[in-house]
Amino acid sequence: MKRGFGSDNHSGVSPEVLEAIAAANTDHALAYGDDEYCRRAEQLFRDTFGPEAKVYFVFNGTGANVLNIDAMCRSHHAVVCAETAHINVDECGAPQRVTGCRLLPVDTPDGKLTPASAETRLHGFGFEHHSQPRAISISNPTELGTLYTLDEIGALADLAHSRGMYLHMDGARLANAAVALGCSFRQMTTDCGVDCLSFGGTKNGLLMGESAVVLNPALDAELKYRRKQMTQLCSKMRFMAVQFEAYLATGLWRRNAEHSNRMAQLLLGSLEGIAEAEVVYPVQANSVFVRLPRKVWTALQEDYFFYDWDEADNVVRWMCSFDTTADDIARFVEALRRRIAEAKGRI
Image 1 (cartoon, rainbow, N blue to C red):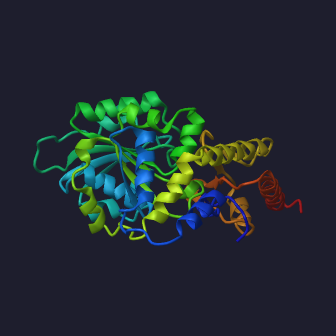
Image 2 (cartoon, rainbow, N blue to C red):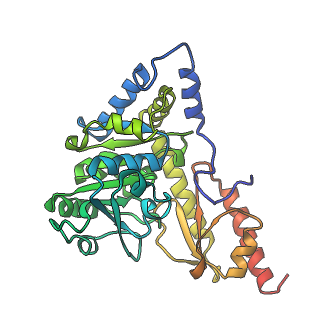
Image 3 (cartoon, rainbow, N blue to C red):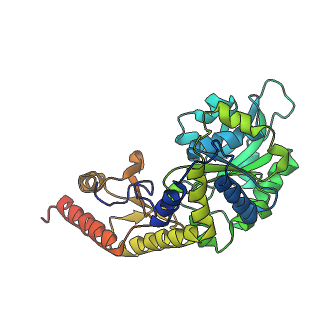
């Protein structure tokens, strides 16, 4: 497959991660997380997010989101989220099917909830005929590539807690948000009042595996059993743990995220002067959303795979990865210019 901009899931694995997996592939180790590798990784999560943080390794981001929602909610509860949220759009109804709770989506112009917009769904408390709002879920970066500031996260946490609710953060690309905001993982989560976190790495150089991180100890109630029921318990968990160890202990998360964010800025700059390519959202992390004439983007998809994010509005999404190069961008923009010229009948 040609190196392109379809998704940061399309990239390979950081060499450091493969080396860590190979180093762990010696002798035997206890299964299901009862090994020295998992103990070291668990301590790293406490060092990173705070002494009360509890990590549960899972197979994928949907598993992390669902386990976190299950920690916060019961089947009569509801979760407020942006209309564009991954849990609402890209998880095939998994949160609703597995937990039984309801999602309450809010339309947003930029993928970000505000206390005012979230408040519009906070009603019916104590009314037994309505699903009870129990959590607010946000993504940082959002699915539109925009960022919540620390103050904005804190304001949503304050709102949730004032209503006896919890705040969940989908951090599939949390490293990209952290380097863009110039803050630590803890400053963006625990210190802002986030109660639980889906912490990802596969979009930033890991091979597989994500994590559900419980930051509020009150939510850590028998989650190990619920993870098992959700089919998210890995037997050879050491191979998940060593990836996160390499990721967190060596600064790999930062190096990879800084690079992919930098490549997104380079791609953004390369679009200057191309009138047909209208950037529709601020480029704050590693994604670029562009409105293009339909004839152009459909022709460009013959050269490169990428998602038509909003087909009705002719908006497409281009993602940069930890291994994207300047040459990749130059070739892509050259193909874009060629397709624009063809659409105009110039070649």
